[in-house]
Image (tube, rainbow, N blue to C red; front, side, top):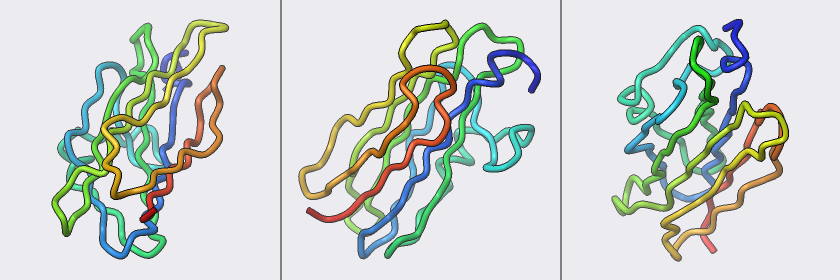
Length: 139
């Protein structure tokens, strides 16, 4: 990962504070690639991300994405967080980490089910996006 695109990354740290497990579905990258936490050279497919679960009562899962080597754009993608017991979508998380100097990164939540509370912590709006903490709990 020596290209500039590969240096732009994000690590979504999802914490499950519910009483039930959360699973990830509908993972998709429009630009860039998913990789295994701690090893950017271990590229994961969207199907492998979709197979990930997050244990309840404080369990954590890292979903990592970076710019693809040789690509002129940074990572851009989405995932759905699902309540494993209720089989309900909690929310959709979307990101776009820019490579353009001075251009703002984007991380947002959509489709929030009001039965859940999702807190997105502080993250870098400019430059390398880095870690994005996300906590899910009951309101």
